[in-house]
Length: 421
Image (cartoon, rainbow, N blue to C red; front, side, top):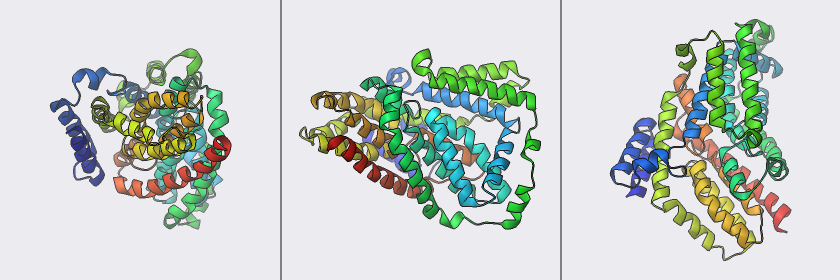
């Protein structure tokens, strides 16, 4: 029954017959009603409940972004980026992809899209570009770039903890592949979004005459906000040393920023995407019910048993199974469920770390396939809807499936040549 309830809710989300928040909350309610999960597991269990770390990380960063928005910083960055690209759409998209992927490697990908989305709306409005292709490209770039480091994507943190891997391990083993994939992704965007690249010379000439410095509305608030944001970023990077979770850091940063500046509480929370947070809560409860009933574990164990101890076969099956499952369910609970199984497989294969990298690549890149595959996807779709430019499930997914297949396929020779020969 839990599987049927999940599939019904997922179908409603995918077809958009009802609002995604209503579908997620309805699905969560049914899971509780049929006792697929209970209040203790749904609200308090670390592995099968609502991930409050994700919820409060989003809340804290949304508040910080809301304050930054009042400074004029995003207008400044929008004009700067447009001038750098000389008003040409593909150059602009390539520039935003590189910025987003690089930032996602240092921050988590959700934080990055929260920061880059306002810039995108402003620059596309200035140049009369359709904003949806840029937002889709950016969120996919954030998922690809975030895979490069331990702190870039939440599943990597889980993998590092379970596998005893360090920040430097991810840099050595994941970053080289991700650099190549970002370059390929830029070329892929040239083809995927080719119909959206319309160049208006008059608009471009108008942009080149603008002075981005004039966009700054409140310099004092800007420096205060940047100082807090810098401290938050440093705390994210130093997580292994400070032992403060990203959610705690984000909430502390938001609290300090609101307390230390003239911004009112009402102004600070005005930019919070409440429907997105509620949608996440419902989604976590539904997926958690599948964890509680053992559905995800049965799928994972069946995949593991099918390989009969062959390392190469195990690696490839783990890579593609993780890609497929992370496209359908959020990659955070999937990795939390799969990581103990992978730990056993690594032990059985004489400590073969390639299995951890296969899990990380599959889960991180598989999140690009659908609109609900990664937390950043849900956030960007919520922001788009709030700003009057909704991105449908299928509009996102038809691009996401192509990007996922290409990037994961390119990861196969990397894993094979570096670890399996």
